[in-house]
Length: 73
Image (cartoon, rainbow, N blue to C red; front, top):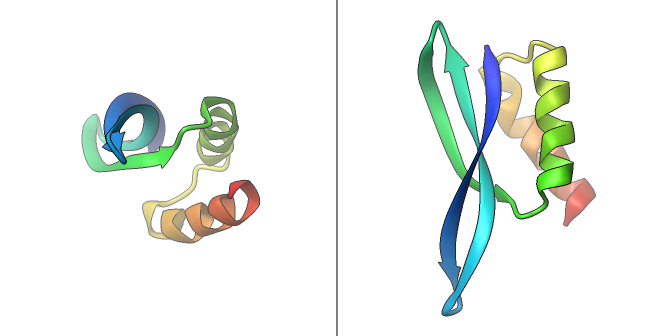
């Protein structure tokens, strides 16, 4: 399982915002794509590095994101 960051733009209250998501890759195929995970690229890079270093299974991702949001929001 590999986690990757992707950039995209979204509209929030009539403003264009650059935001970042996480793509989950397994066996060369995208298994899941999460949009609007964060606007803080630096924090998201650290999270994705930890996800990849820990070889985190997809089933745990939502709980880890809950913790991430608690820390960064």
